[in-house]
Length: 479
Image (cartoon, rainbow, N blue to C red; front, side):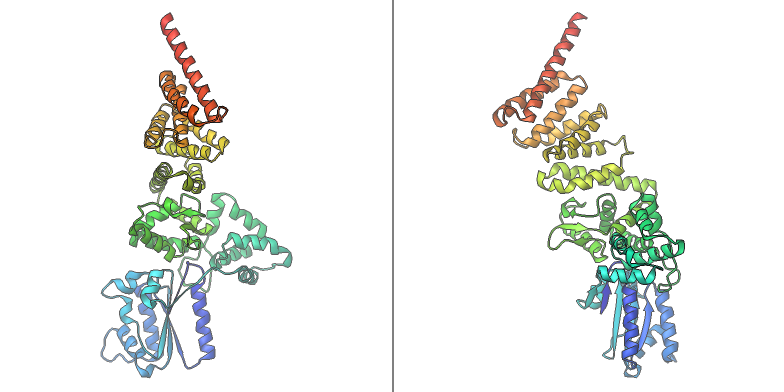
């Protein structure tokens, strides 16, 4: 049997409660506890079990085999073996000295595993596993009220908001309670910190605190707990790690599968499976839309930042390139789902003022906003690209080239051609602008109403192009 779920969701606490219940109700059972954090913690626990059960080791064999042999025998009686924190496949199954070799199998006993990894859960228990979900609001309120000193009924409204912000996660609630008790912080103030600056949020979720229910030396801060898993994913599942990098740059909610990096292949499906297996991603029903806990998302940013500024910049530039690619390679429908993610990424990369890839993304976001009739936002995006200078022309020309396979009356193609003509005008390339607008004017006369805003804009651009061309010619003649 296995219990799986997000780090900090309460798997070890559930196993402890189960152990106490067994001892209370079924006193004939021996309850044995083995931390599987590493070979060393496992071996030390088996040494203690051997002493407790007076296991005979006269043949001087590996003590772990002696304990296994004893537990498989009728002499051991009935037992429950709890293998806690069995998170790593390579520790359990990977080496020639893996832990699985020393786990007993007997009709007299039951082995219960706790693990963050659904891959491990399936490997050790097949379909006999429980995925631990987040607490309900009443459960979270009960835990919070028990941990925080001096909570009154008048605090209930703010308590609800705080627990929602903490995603009802037991470890996050325990960390908040420890901070509030130590600093005499009011609920409202802690909530302000969570919703405040990035610096305040990071300071809270990375702050270590004492927790007597967790192992000595373990990472108790909620972000640091998850970073351990992030590092394990990076080492064992590179594709899933790349996906985590990308997710750290976009919004944590309403994530379309099509926006995620990688082709729609089994490799991409496996990467999603790994992140879902650790409960870092959750699927909305049977859709292809995913969500990530806000605090997990914040922890990914802490993780990326801890790897240094070069890695952080590389992650953000890769995310920009990915979004720019999906924006101009897909139809307009899904792009509405991409907009919040692109806008967040653009906001957090404003310092990359020399990146053509960023302005390329900004251009396609502007086009998408225009198509969605969000004209003010579209104008702001496209004007930013215009003001960038001569390199903006390259972006617009690439955009027009990407539209050549579409019909000449396609609305998106027309808007992109408008943008290029505007860019030509801003750099005094009047003949180039006029050439584009003359063709666009003919197409729009057949497909758009006379007073359509796009057609009116075409007439204005064409007039400006002709005036500019005439003035340039006049100036040359006078010279």
